Image (cartoon, rainbow, N blue to C red; front, side, top):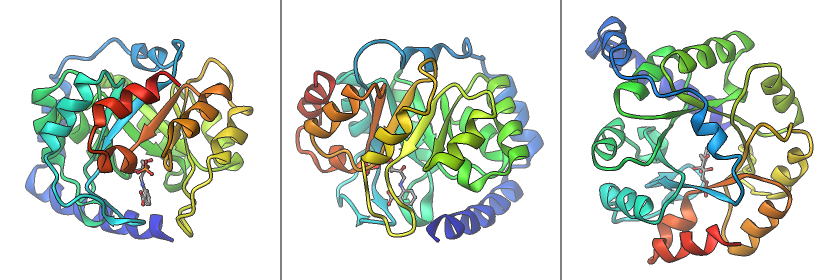
Length: 259
Ligand SMILES: O=C(O)c1ccccc1NCC(=O)[C@H](O)[C@H](O)COP(=O)(O)O
């Protein structure tokens, strides 16, 4: 399965990065940065309306290269001007052509909260996210043990980061809800065959307490998709490919916001 490969390459990459910048040095840097008031971000997603997380995504395992031209700073600036609630920045290099430097540079240019979109499997990556200017990190339940999930949630909280905890099915959701989760993402993409089914989000919404904001992730193409999700009580959508391929991202975001 693709997640196994992603974990493998990420483990190797992080080992190499630790050899370049030791954990102690990164930790010292991250811990001296200001801690934002915790949980204000997740609460924001509970406010009325459909919240939008726009993704800066160059490539993906399911689609290959999505766009040839990738002016990531310009894209993030456009997302901010269109008033997205957060910007997801892919930093995984091997399958998504992402880079931590995109996050670092974007954080210097925009004030919108940034999600470090990567396959978090080591606390080192959480310190990296904080140091690079992220406000949110992604924790994918499928690739974490109970212990890791609990420890990473605790570390994120201590650093003032909001964790978007991602699940794909009922059993992962159950594991997530055993923890103190403040923001839940439901991925509509089946990572075995890459098929996308928005019903995944619709089905799981009913099993998630109303006070935990839920973000539907992947495969959102049209305003009709977004409306269906909003009408089902879903608080936000994370949109990558559709925005990346759009020649008028501002207008498209405007349309998604008013479904
Ligand atoms: O996008 C993929 O092909 C993919 C494959 C394996 C693991 C994760 C993958 N995507 C990560 C994401 O969560 C999406 O980038 C995000 O939900 C946006 O999806 P989309 O709007 O369909 O680009």
